[in-house]
Image 1 (cartoon, rainbow, N blue to C red):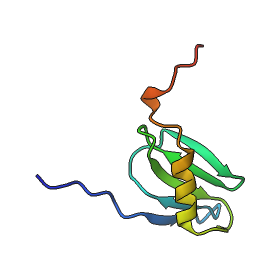
Image 2 (image 1 turned 90 degrees about the vertical axis):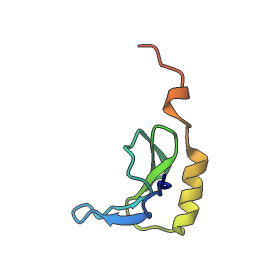
Image 3 (image 1 turned 45 degrees about the vertical axis):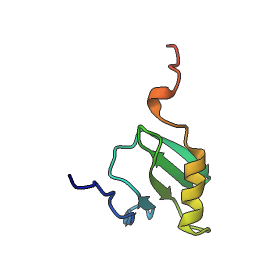
Length: 85
Protein backbone atom coordinates (compact mmCIF):
# COMPACT_ATOMS: atom_id res chain seq x y z
CA UNK A 1 0.00 0.00 0.00
CA UNK A 2 1.51 3.32 -1.07
CA UNK A 3 1.51 6.24 1.34
CA UNK A 4 -0.72 9.14 0.30
CA UNK A 5 1.16 12.40 -0.01
CA UNK A 6 -0.29 15.89 0.19
CA UNK A 7 0.02 18.16 -2.85
CA UNK A 8 2.86 20.67 -2.73
CA UNK A 9 1.68 24.07 -1.44
CA UNK A 10 1.30 26.58 -4.24
CA UNK A 11 0.30 30.17 -4.89
CA UNK A 12 -2.64 31.09 -7.09
CA UNK A 13 -3.40 34.65 -8.25
CA UNK A 14 -6.80 36.11 -9.06
CA UNK A 15 -6.15 38.18 -12.17
CA UNK A 16 -9.35 40.22 -11.69
CA UNK A 17 -9.23 41.07 -7.97
CA UNK A 18 -5.48 40.74 -7.45
CA UNK A 19 -5.84 38.42 -4.46
CA UNK A 20 -3.25 35.73 -3.80
CA UNK A 21 -4.11 32.31 -2.40
CA UNK A 22 -1.58 29.97 -0.81
CA UNK A 23 -3.15 26.54 -1.25
CA UNK A 24 -1.99 23.88 1.20
CA UNK A 25 -4.59 21.15 0.53
CA UNK A 26 -7.23 20.18 -2.04
CA UNK A 27 -9.80 19.35 0.66
CA UNK A 28 -13.02 21.44 0.69
CA UNK A 29 -13.10 24.58 2.84
CA UNK A 30 -15.29 24.08 5.94
CA UNK A 31 -14.73 27.43 7.63
CA UNK A 32 -12.49 30.51 7.59
CA UNK A 33 -10.78 32.66 10.22
CA UNK A 34 -9.61 36.25 9.68
CA UNK A 35 -5.95 36.48 10.74
CA UNK A 36 -5.68 40.21 10.01
CA UNK A 37 -7.54 42.86 8.00
CA UNK A 38 -6.24 41.48 4.70
CA UNK A 39 -5.44 37.82 5.49
CA UNK A 40 -7.98 34.98 5.83
CA UNK A 41 -7.14 31.35 6.65
CA UNK A 42 -9.36 28.53 5.33
CA UNK A 43 -9.72 25.20 7.16
CA UNK A 44 -11.05 21.73 6.29
CA UNK A 45 -13.55 19.78 8.46
CA UNK A 46 -10.73 18.38 10.62
CA UNK A 47 -9.51 21.89 11.46
CA UNK A 48 -6.34 21.61 9.34
CA UNK A 49 -5.17 24.62 7.32
CA UNK A 50 -6.50 24.33 3.75
CA UNK A 51 -5.15 27.65 2.43
CA UNK A 52 -4.51 31.31 3.13
CA UNK A 53 -5.91 34.22 1.12
CA UNK A 54 -4.01 37.50 0.90
CA UNK A 55 -5.88 40.60 -0.22
CA UNK A 56 -3.20 43.13 -1.04
CA UNK A 57 0.50 42.74 -0.32
CA UNK A 58 2.05 40.22 2.08
CA UNK A 59 4.06 41.93 4.81
CA UNK A 60 5.43 38.86 6.60
CA UNK A 61 6.95 35.62 5.26
CA UNK A 62 4.42 32.87 4.38
CA UNK A 63 5.71 30.65 7.22
CA UNK A 64 4.65 33.32 9.72
CA UNK A 65 1.09 33.28 8.34
CA UNK A 66 0.98 29.46 8.31
CA UNK A 67 1.97 29.41 11.98
CA UNK A 68 -0.71 32.03 12.80
CA UNK A 69 -3.28 29.96 10.88
CA UNK A 70 -2.36 26.76 12.74
CA UNK A 71 -2.78 28.55 16.08
CA UNK A 72 -6.11 30.12 15.03
CA UNK A 73 -7.90 26.88 14.11
CA UNK A 74 -11.19 26.24 15.85
CA UNK A 75 -10.67 22.49 15.58
CA UNK A 76 -12.72 19.82 13.85
CA UNK A 77 -16.30 20.75 12.98
CA UNK A 78 -17.72 17.54 14.46
CA UNK A 79 -16.48 18.53 17.95
CA UNK A 80 -18.12 21.96 18.00
CA UNK A 81 -21.38 22.43 19.91
CA UNK A 82 -24.50 22.90 17.82
CA UNK A 83 -26.09 26.35 18.00
CA UNK A 84 -29.84 26.06 18.68
CA UNK A 85 -32.08 27.57 16.00
